[in-house]
Image 1 (cartoon, rainbow, N blue to C red):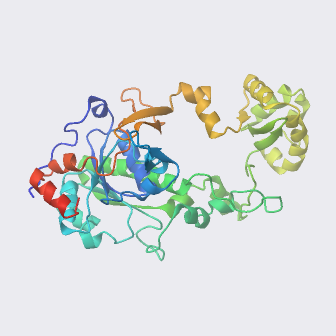
Image 2: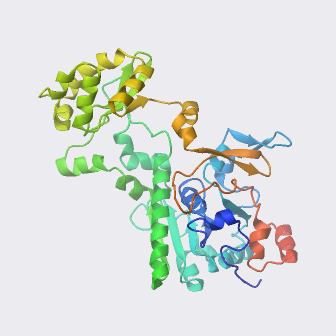
Length: 422
């Protein structure tokens, strides 16, 4: 098998080539969410992302349902919505790299790649010759990113790490949930996999920084992304509150430890979010409800005063919020220029006029499912707009196309497929 790499942009559409990262080729050995979230970002930005999957099974998230997409022709269950959420714009290559022939294919792809992303256990790829040290020998310019639960060093480095576990160990669940002295009190997991998503975003940022460093003539490098590191690094004010004061932050339900009123309050017909971020906004709120004197009350005049006197503030505010409907509050707060509004269900989110105006929901053509929904990448560029790319791929959809770029002949493809390598 002779390697002959084509440029990263070879055979790609004009839409893709107009994106910021159209010059990059990424080999993606990551699964589930953290790694695929990073590589979906890179794909949205125009990189050619080659997703390596196990023949016959693929990424675990293909089976993580229901819900599943239905085959347009047969109506049978296909890929799970979970898989579709984090694999847009990629090319799927089904190859078994536990086989030496599969290892050679992945190495040939890495030889011509800019970026390599994996989320196997520490040292897990060494026996296949796909670890950083092995690939650096054939491609010194490679930016290699490892995403693990606990990182490449330390006493926990060999442990498996999952989002739920990391939310607990990393401190997020200690400050998420209702107060322990109230009904329903206790630690809560966030409603989405924030540890995975944060790790994916940090990985994206680190990869782009390393590519810039390489392009200035300094060569490739190994990036070590740990879910635990990213979780602890994202605790923001909660961690600094502890480090500065020595006081351990507690769960506060929807409340905020450093700002008030900044929480959920009862309206006449539902729940109202008030996010009053400064003193001028609080005074405008008081004026809007016909009680301007509260805005200058010594107990409530500043953010610090309102935080210290939170119980008295809520004793005044709760009857006020209960006196109006959500629709009335939305209108009143908009006129007063005070941040606040309803808590939308998912159907209400995608029906919201602002979400509709921003085009956050899109649909992409798919060879098996007809058209599939997707959520548009929120990054907006004036010169290189990120129009949605291709739908998440079928398992092995691009195997032949991609392997031809590394010199695999039709005869070799047939033989590899017969042997179960592809």
